[in-house]
Length: 440
Image 1 (cartoon, rainbow, N blue to C red):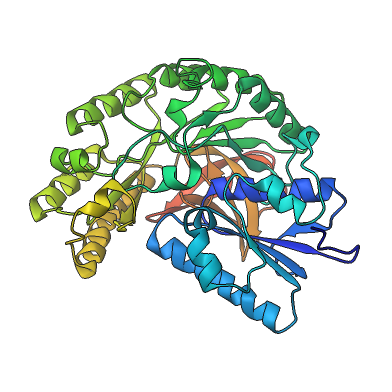
Image 2: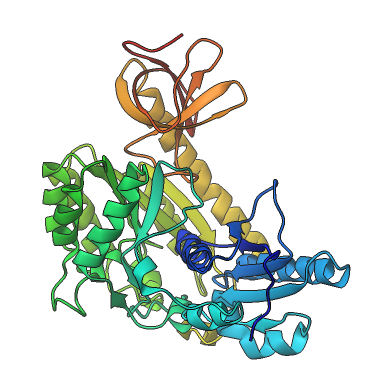
């Protein structure tokens, strides 16, 4: 059904994780490939047709998605926009309920229904555009989604309900996409998936993440390759050998562990014990001595006792992760954990999250202070306020530490690499000055 005119402007609003960012980038690319004026949400431009790409992961994300939909329903009622479409995880999971509760939305689409969404614009899905993306990140880095879906059965997670079973993309397709990104000026790619370490089992009948890394590292123009969202159980340890041997692979691994007490891990269906996690961490640090391990912990899982939480705190203190985030448990319908009583009061969940992050803040501050006087290579992201802001290979955008350089004294160009001497440190920020020939 044709819903557009030549004057239409299609605004894509993206909520949630980096995987949604990639999906939105593909929507924009396909629309533009059909000569439709489409763009990512910005302060400079608004569209008369809006597509909201939603997140349905946890309660807070669902609330943000609903609020954004309702905000654009108001825009539609006021005549500011003509059409409103909703896609993504929330739409996949709750489509029937949303259609009843918010009839003002013109159509809802699931996570794998891009062709159906395009049909609303009288547009065709162009296979020749696969691998070409209109990135919405800063131009020098991009996310590379290597698979879709997840075969894991973590009791707290609803992602398989929204994204389906694991499906790997071929190494050839990913190399082609990376080549196109490099041609467009991307210098850092971040591999993302619901679960990286399962990569290849469906199409190659083996874990092939290490093979993929070797193939991508050959790409001219790509200087950093970063790994996100690796599952710890049955981790393919050969990845650490590739990381150690190939300079393009950042010494960085995002590996959510979720908890440390064996009973909680069992209730979470994580298929791993604390002892096994300790051995994996020991292997990682032995093979890659300067690796930065990023993890995510969850507090307030059903039945989490004070003793179990204290063991988690002790584990974090002992391991001293370089980077860590904390989630409060969200009771999700249709998950295995939903049959448990959500018996940890919200106040205690919040208190435990704060306590765990206070431990991590102390660890991070000590690690950052130890870097004063040392040199590191950074990728300059942007100028903000009075600083140029960059990241080391141990830091991913938006979630990790940043390095700040006084813009009143030095000039650095975003997208360039620079050698920096660290001169100051805070819990999650470093300060430095350029080394070598830098324009003052």
